[in-house]
Image 1 (spheres, rainbow, N blue to C red):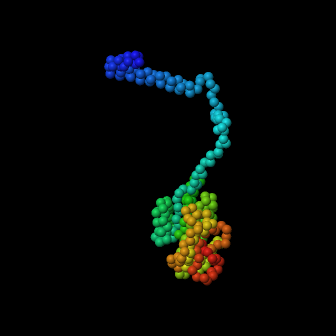
Image 2: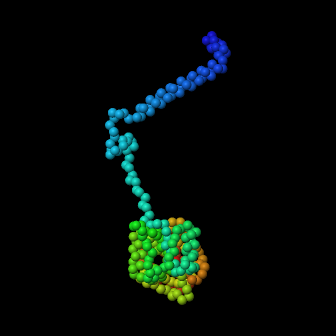
Length: 258
């Protein structure tokens, strides 16, 4: 108790300036101590000059509990084609061709339009071993079917080598045959039909954002639909529909591919 009383009397006689000076000295001492220990710890991490250099060919040491098999890193396969769509149109002012271009523009796809060649020169398809087009669209599929042998072989080889698909449209008129086979293809066209009950083929490999179980019940608008039918394994329809009439059509089953 006497010692505590003397300490209280001593504190009463100490001026504020002396208290601030003592705090400053204490802080300065703490900084020097911290710097000393920090510098010593950093030097401990530096490699010794006498220590042998590690061999770059040796694997880094790991603890036994961390010794796990390394998974091989697979590099992303770069695309072999440019992100460009080649659109073959019958003329620069054809209605269907303009509709196709409008869809590409609204979806922000880069495209290039060309008049569909019959026997003329095919546009250059490759450049320095790289494909120039990722997709080919024909406004009229008959333009592709009736290509001369040279251009047809050139285009087919390009599609196979670079994994490029072809989208073709067929617009029927009042003079179109009800049923016809595409020349050189195991593919039948059936034109000017009324359809109903449109559904998505669950076997199609293109079902990324669609639901195969959904069916659009009822009659489809218009009576000028064209459907495709094939019994070849290389053809797989994306959309299916039924004909409105009960009349049987040659080669046409219960469901037809749109």
